[in-house]
Image 1 (spheres, one colour):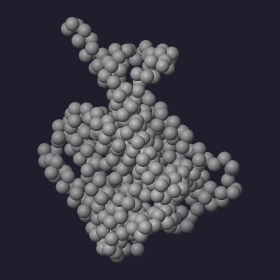
Image 2: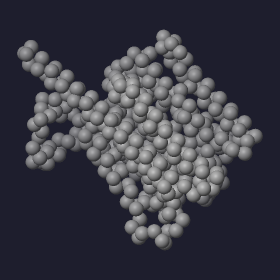
Image 3: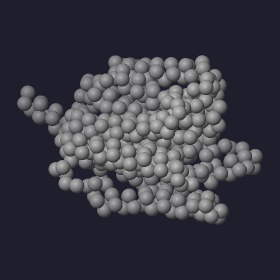
Image 4: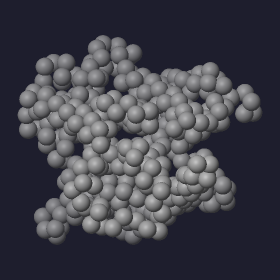
Length: 441
């Protein structure tokens, strides 16, 4: 396809057509094949929605580990007919396309790169025309719903719609916990114009003394109007939704929506190197060490994704920082499935234009080959285990999971380096503009 033919109408109509084709194919496969197209999670969602329609708790459905809000949204799936049963899939697929529209809008905006429509469409296609994205949403995974909320959050922040950003952040964290990691980046990013000017004037080689950074005055200045509004609005939405759900569903809401994820020991379809340990914990919980590693695994994950990366990168490139955060969160998560890849894929169009993976095609091809190859090795071991009955936990699954983890860490290192260098170039440009202004004065 020649780039000259790339128009919003063509790209978005193609994206919609792709999802319609997958939806129709899914209906046929579900009807005539013993191997179902519909994701098991979608069956959980729709069962929970049916319980809600009957005036019962969605947690009557075993393995429903989500906010009741999702079951409420999917209430039409409890109505009679194939169309209404597929309502959730349609909603998730539409969310995919809307997320792609936000990507295009951000890339064209001055704050997001000021690209031409044609160039922005090329990068938006990474999401809109990606078969993996379309497959996951049309199989009934809710990741598309989170994707549109998260990319809308990014748009609201760069356009300084702070109240809206707070609402979207609070809603996103309520629907699924992981977007809380973006809070630190956004707060750090929302510096006042005075802070930005002082930061550009200050040389990176001579940072502020630690006593000045920790002074009461500096701390008070940190909490500027934008940061305070974001924190208050996001907490207000998050807490209000939680109070409402707790008032209706009591302890099961807290247990299944939040607390469960601290001790979950899912080991099926899990690329994480924790996979084997989680299997041992689930198979013989009394024989495993009293130190529950699955309860502590989140510590390095949170340290890297929610603290270190935001502090180091968020003022340099917010979208790139959110990509690095999400990539680290998924890579270090004790449960890592292919659906989670969509969490960071949504940010890829904002990072790739300045990435080493495009400027050095060999590096990009190598990274993609290793990323896909490591998954293929793991899937081969998983196939032998689940379909052939061969025990491949050690060394097969463990080593392949560790290999995939190491590949992800290597890619993450390159991403972080690229974002850091982008910020350094921007700082140098800012210093040159300041010097030029002084000379003119």
